[in-house]
Length: 171
Image (tube, rainbow, N blue to C red):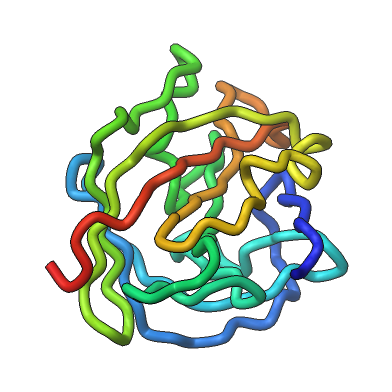
């Protein structure tokens, strides 16, 4: 099992190589439709290569109805400009904008996979790699990781994590 990666704190010109997979992430309740590409952590650090896509951590399970591990998708949130997961939190109120029960659809090679949000959490970036809940092996689970937005803060000290489970493969 790969070591839990750290999440980088701010969007930048990452040198992380992109692994094209031609998948799509949809969270209709938030108006999110984003491409998904693959990437690997770079020396234990997760730094998505672009601001406009979600990235599957390819060291872990690929999205499928028969995944034997947790599927991880990571993406940037940034208070100073557009980023794929900006709509996950409200910087002014410091609240999640993804309620429990929100539907997430991943369109991957095997067709659409529907997940439902179980919980969200905020973790200090320094604690993310050691937080067992985040990195537990749970077949059929989807975990989305981004930075927690703070108004006017360029480098967030926290990560925001969304936990979801697969409900209807192929629907």
